[in-house]
Image (tube, rainbow, N blue to C red; front, side, top):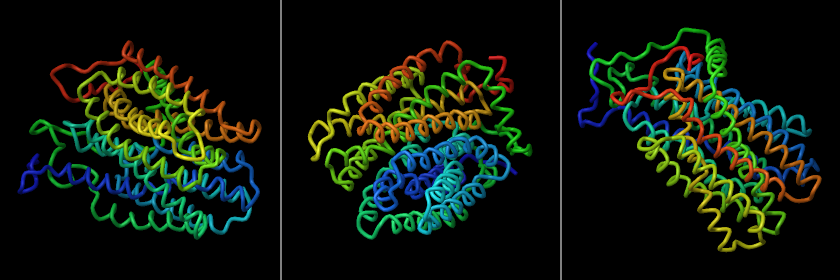
Amino acid sequence: MTLSTTPTRRGLHRAWYVAAVAFVTILGAAGFRATPGVLITPLREEFGWSAGTISLAVSINLVLYGLTAPFAAALMDRFGMRRVVAVALLLIACGSGLTVLMTASWHLLLLWGVLVGLGTGSMALVFAATVVDRWFVRHRGLVIGVLTAAGATGQLVFLPVLAHLAQGPGWRFASLTVAAAALAVVPFVWWLLRDRPEDVGTTALGAQPGAVRAAPSTANAAVRAVTVLAAAARTRPFWLLAGGFAICGASTNGLVGTHFIPAAHDHGMAEPVAASLLAVIGIFDIVGTVASGWLSDKMDPKVLLGVYYGLRGLSLMVLPGLFAATTEPSMLIFIIFYGLDWVATVPPTVALCRRVYGADGAVVFGWVFGAHQVGAAIAAFGAGLTRDHLGAYDLAWYAAGALCLVAAGMSLVIGHARERRTPASDEPEQATNPSKR
């Protein structure tokens, strides 16, 4: 079969259609990542569970969300994106829907922690990274920025809706809404998503005519994921990327995403108002993440990471003094600034993984993303304990800010150990033995 890089009659490459499908899928599926923040107070009031207990369920969810990612990336290589994502959505629907029947805290740990954690882990950022690696050679940074913004922004935009549902019809209605949304996305993924350019007789956007793409892996997915980790773990860039991204997770999903609403509630702010502020973060996140993707195609990614982490750390250190019962201008300034930085770290991190580890970049990013979620889990649980024992979240905000400054320093030295691409090629070097780097 002769492969063409312009499969549509109007000249629009098929890769853009695949990216659009992935964007809508990630955006529509984001509701189940938004739920924990609006459940903490209602569950605490109805069942009498402590913030620490509920945060433990969130932590399990976050850990599995991250640790499932590298195996999901390998499974996508073996069985295709459509199958893996469709099964993941079914897991999420079951886990979220069955929470309406729970009567004990361990039910929350099992359903929201384990089932939803496994499902969302398979829909994590490795899905976006896999789409970009398979379908794009040009504009990779820009596209990963757009897809990343879809997930983070969709999650935050859903928050006001879920908060109103939790306060009105109740948290059970909010959980059922999430389950229904997950089920609604399944046929969309199955009918419209395509796994590889070769499936529709084309090549990746920007690939050279006649370029040969790697064949789908037939290896055991778990074995490949562990083998890639073992090789990458012997290199310095992996630990710098994983450590920085762990701090990234702690300062976003783990702390702000989970505890901003209850922290604002502690200062007299209504939960729907606090949820709306997080939604505003999501709006500005679109601009910040897309711009970060564009910049990742133009600038040294390690410099971008250093700037992003540094600015985030400084902003978190001033946050405790901004909480009030009403939305003050200073809080709005923080929300806008933090929104621009929310997940701007993802495109340069993906770019560095691809540059250093070549064809294994998506799987390596899965492990780096696993570190992100471990950091998020520690922060979610730790902040809950801080609130239980100290009566306030202030210490958690200051600690996260200081760690972000550490991550900035770690990011800036990644360049001393990374593998560089040849100037004449847009493709990463296809080194197959990262342990030699």
